[in-house]
Length: 233
Ligand SMILES: [Zn+2]
Image (cartoon, rainbow, N blue to C red; front, side, top):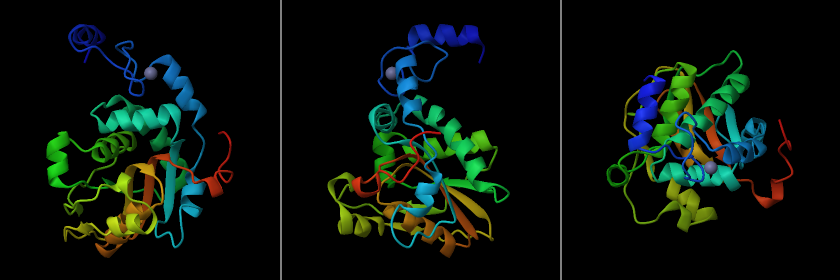
């Protein structure tokens, strides 16, 4: 799309910041204030996500971009409500982190934490899929959206905690499609207890993935290990 047609489009569909939702310039993903606030929440949480996101971590590599607070939290919530700008913005940083964390063991394909068909229909799209596809585009990797599914259920994840949340994650299952020893990049918007990503990682390995690397746009740090990640970077 040319800049002229982007300007024209902006007259009819005003571009909005992917975090705060305020009108912003047609060629920006975030308003300047949110972009600065988001960058202040950026640190390399990859090592943290690899080591400290819970016990018995099954993934072989991890990348994460922002601390789930302030502008980053607003961006994730806006993305869940249909705004694409935060996904595109976060995908760029996340792709850089994936490259840095993967080294020579770069993923060969990208997938994401699935949602139920009914939720996808209700929302019109899946935010994890949006993020996964944006990261894949940045990395020039193919996507696979046919490996995992989520079974419909009553409980929404934000309503449960701890053991219940681990139980909830068992709602994911494999479609039966086989992989043949690839390294898979598994994307999600928020890494909290890791139970969702843990379950999905195990399923991908059962499906034939040799290695699974996770990519979380944000990490929600628990109080007991809030000091673990680097303060900046
Ligand atoms: Zn903003």
